[in-house]
Length: 153
Image (spheres, rainbow, N blue to C red):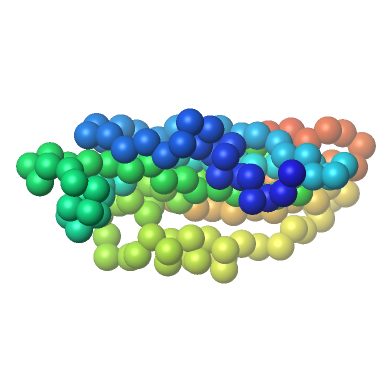
């Protein structure tokens, strides 16, 4: 199994078109490639189809149609709760009414990530604040990974 199968896990029933716009859903899954685990978190949302796409598909012009899209984080590290929270924040900021293109929102996230730093207890953590949420990815050498999410006041 290769990373090329990620879309099959994100859309196990295929990409569906609908006349209804709904919120997003997020979930996580693990791919095993050879003996290595790859951790994936996915956020599925609906986006309005353009008029030209609707015409090509033969849809009525009076009704809006929506297509499913996905945002994914693929990592060697298991932080499913934090990844899903981060995807939700990316979605909220990217879909808010502003003049910033969605790809720029994602680019900003990647450029602003701070590399892991060791704290006083020998733990390594990556800390990131995005869209009003402080996200901490923390590893502990003697203890299992613990999910830590903190909302900023």
